[in-house]
Image 1 (cartoon, rainbow, N blue to C red):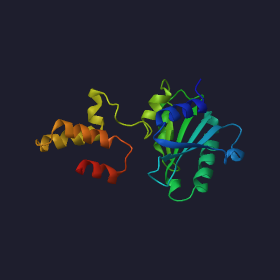
Image 2 (image 1 turned 90 degrees about the vertical axis):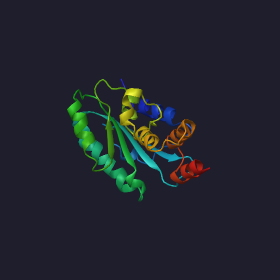
Image 3 (image 1 turned 60 degrees about the vertical axis):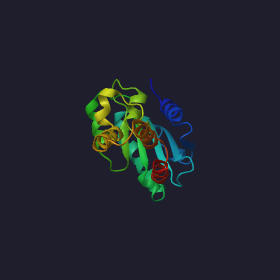
Image 4 (image 1 turned 30 degrees about the horizontal axis):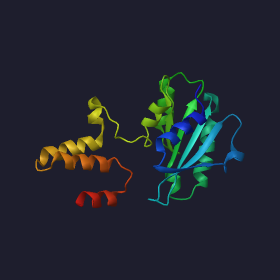
Length: 188
């Protein structure tokens, strides 16, 4: 049975060295007992002053309203612009329906939501989010990777670009560097 701690452990493992990860205790007194929660702040290593807030919740379908109320409380507590970088990763224990998961995920009213779907692993759920980088793509899914599409298009329009230069671009675009640093490295 998956837990909130399992999601946190997977996030920590995947983001080790890329983000500063801080587990928050400030909202624990507001948590309804029917919700198993962990609130995590993520900050890219020294490239920004803003934090992303990840809320991990495990609950039952009957407690979804309480889950939304808790998310609303967190969103209201966060300063601008950090309240725009709020993400929910949830496990709905008694959910057997993909439709229910999609219904929850389709609304971005309070935050961006990711629900563990039936027969989905935690890694598969995380890969649908910003947390897993695009550098691990499969050949048949290349058309789903915008970086690969852009590089392929650039290569076809500019034959003077060498393979090693395109490889360098691919590495830079999939890195954790900010836009200005990427431009500087391309121009070098």
